[in-house]
Image 1: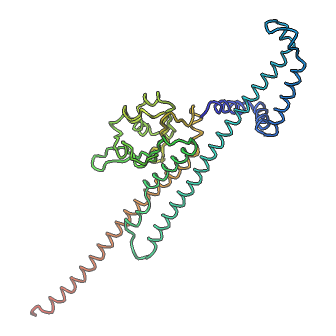
Image 2: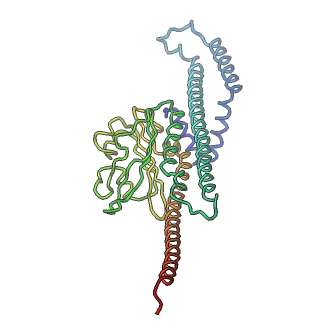
Image 3: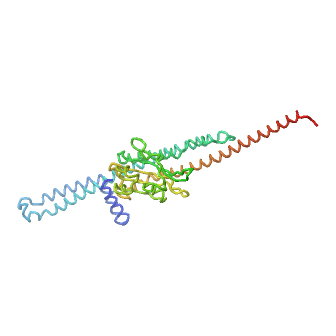
Amino acid sequence: MKKPVKTVMFFKKVSRNYKKFGRLINRFYNILKSPFARTLINFLFTVVFAFEMQLSDFHTFKLNQLEFYQDKVHILVTFVFIVVYNWLVLLIDSYQKYQVQSTKCIREIVNRETVINQTIGRKLYDITSSISVKSSSIPTKSDFSNLSYQDIAALVCHNIYDAIKISTDKETHQVSLMQKFKEKRSGLEYIKMISYGNANQISPSVFDRHFYLGRDQSYFQVRIFNNNQNNIFILTNTAEIKKECVYGKNSNEKMTQYIAIPVFCENQGIISLLQIEMADDVQIGRTMDEIRDFVKPFMAYIHILTVNYYQDELFKVIVKKFDILKKSKERKVFSEGMRKYEQNYGETNTSIAPKD
């Protein structure tokens, strides 16, 4: 984000704190962004400056004489007004350009969120239709394989990557998702990257690598999961990143900003961590507030991930229930078959057994 935009953000903050002053700033802003008002102001400045030049005496005194400047103070004042006016115009143009980029980013997010919802809806329809084909049949695990939390995470990572690319016109950033798991035998909890979105779509070096919550405390992501708080974590510059050591000493050299947004469930805490990593001096904000404003539209994707995680867990429970039902049905069929076999076996023996 450029420095003029930062100045405009400061004025917006002041206008929110002081409402009367804020209304004055807003009216002034609306006037200066109008092409008609700008044309009129430039015309007036030209006329006033030309009139002042005619009134001033440039021949009687020389530059090194104090009297030379006595009738020219108004020219200096007009010149200062022209400079301030053009500075304000540059500020407004820069802020409007920033707004266009932000709107473009948000529009892209909304469009892609719609695509994700359509994809999920289509998969859910396939699942329900395959289950309800025959009322007598019991669904199997394959009937639920169309829907995967990792697939949704991949869509989210790619979509956020594209939205940032559209907004910054750069492609040196990466978006990824870390998820928490537990080993069945040892019970140890660990996190690993399950999805990512970047320019070349080459797997990052840490993809599918295990970071154990109990022993890998030097990694920033592990500490986030251990703290288990539903906050957005932001490292605004390279100095903070080197201090916190995001992935270790050898993997954060080019990173300039790091943003981590937890996917939080009330009964489980942090289940996943959406990461945005900026590199090569590309930034999405200079301060915490600017970065938070930029990533605010991405919270819709966090909601999608949360809903689909619950949905994925629900389907796992349903699959287990159906497995139990299927096994009990198989046992019932087996026991009924055995009873028929035993009856036939008994009848056969009775017919050939000698009578007393």
